Length: 116
Image (cartoon, rainbow, N blue to C red; front, side):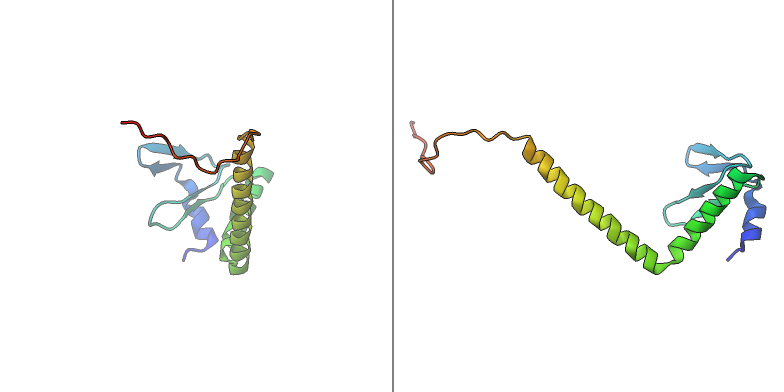
């Protein structure tokens, strides 16, 4: 595994191939590229200044966070809770679109008249 310094030395690559698209990163920008069946590509800014420091800190934090099994588990539970809440909200929204029509409900099921 590469250390952070080696990774930062490779950041001079400005163009990243993404099928037919190109992503251009300046020396003050960073990115995480996720591809199918490939390890993540992490590009930290090589510029100086507070914005670059903040991007590098965010990238380092994300790398740290995904290694914390307890954080990943907690986040998964958080997402599950959100999805459950959204499902309940969606069901309530669908129900709110219907209007209850008051009427007689004396006959349960009336057989249709069959005329041939």
